[in-house]
Length: 363
Image 1 (cartoon, rainbow, N blue to C red):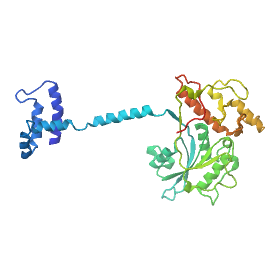
Image 2 (cartoon, rainbow, N blue to C red):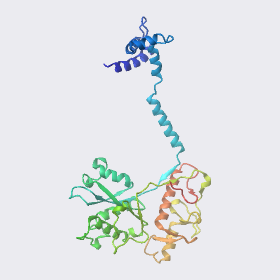
Image 3 (cartoon, rainbow, N blue to C red):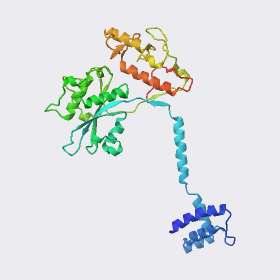
Image 4 (cartoon, rainbow, N blue to C red):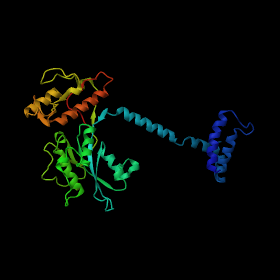
């Protein structure tokens, strides 16, 4: 046993033996004797002589005092926990906005057999998902991307109303020859077309096909340096937003004061009460227009304007009957889903079934 190990054991034994009242009556506590011997024996003669002349305090006692003043690692852990509690107490209550996306990966493998291959996938967190793919199957990556990278996430299509809608889009993008919507188009890869150009052309056809052309989606180039032009014969619809850059997490602040909430108003079209948030749509100009509508009433109003009420369930876009502001139907539905999430967080309080007043704050 080394000297360091014997010192540690002595310190622990000293506390245990003295606590139990077991002592060597001739020489004091058993462990204290051995501890003092170990410590004092380690001093040089010059230091030992100086300690004898030091006002009655020997070297062992000074060593014991300095030892008690050393920082305790457990104290640091406790302080960190307390700091986390304080940070959590002052954290602004919020909910993470929903995100459903379908992405396209491009292989940068040095193996020519895998290089420039594409992979289509679904995710709720693109930044985490690309790390998983590049880390391998053992870390959550897909079997088809394992040992075939590194991979670049070139683009992602997001804004789907729910995960089911996004997963259906993913499957159709992966299997255009099997999709009931795309099979009649007979999409085949051209000889002068890269794998990614072919996948982009399929995506553009999908964005122009039902049911996806009626959704307010966003096509995002995650790596602008890999951006290529859309096919001229099948451009994305005008209401599809095209954006650039990485996806950032967005949260909605949950108001805490009663004054920041309103009761659900009556429908501005049928003038009847709206019984629940699941039936409610608000005008997108919430700062200037306070209009509330039943979903069915606003849908019928917008579809009648285009004479489509008999064939469709909801419009792509429309204008508010009160203020004339143009809206995308998908944006109103996303606002409704956030209101439902806020209401769920208030389910045990007095703010239940009330909606935040005005525009929601993002962070």
